[in-house]
Length: 313
View 1 (cartoon, rainbow, N blue to C red):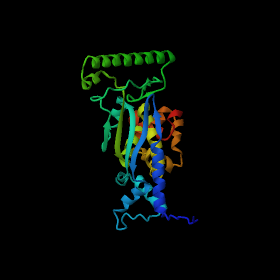
View 2: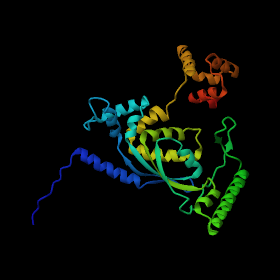
View 3: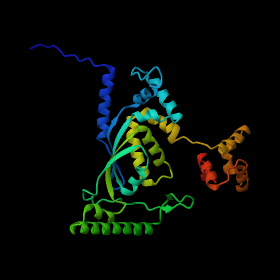
View 4: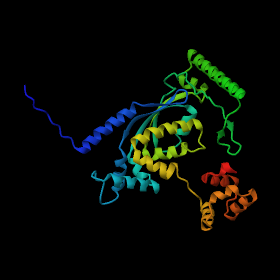
């Protein structure tokens, strides 16, 4: 017997790679539940924050060296995001596994540049799972695309009952058609758009960020925002530097039109806070907007929301 010890020498880069593999494995084992039956889960990914900076540097003679400084990488990623240079972010590939209602899939997958493989109702009997709405909202009076608040309790109960009734009826017809020998590809036409399906989406990080920018918008449907929030939570852990920049320069940033900048500049030159608009009379405020060519009500409301003063009016 000898007491000789085996010493393994591992480079720092190799150690980082091992830690990354462990991190990805742990995140892949997490399934974030969404809605009544849905979920979002990482299926696989390629690349990390460094991959983005390396892809950007290939444009220069310095090339895509692996021996880059972390602080420089951080600064470069923030610059790329601030300038909306999304191409280097496309060097990172993501595969996400989702379970969503058909109506949400139709909206989620409208963005270009992705590929998906979906559960096929042509070959399989669809599971008896449909989205259950727990809060029925009121259509917005100011925006035809969105809903807000909640209907009263009596209406909540009635709408929930009608929803379940519709699901049960369509499922019974679907099952009867299959029992009669109808092909699955035709019987599926009677299923509701609340029916759940599963799919795996492959997409690059730049396109995913564009998707999230749309689906995390306050005007996006609440049910789709839940999937966007779950996806953001997963990807922020994988790409912390990229998503820090994404939050700072895109998701939580505010952009102003030429007319809005003109209005702001007048306030700043006068040493006044533009939030003073909230304290003006309606007539005075409308005159200020007209003087800066902001004529439509929707543009005025959008501008005041950017200043976080609309609720004060």
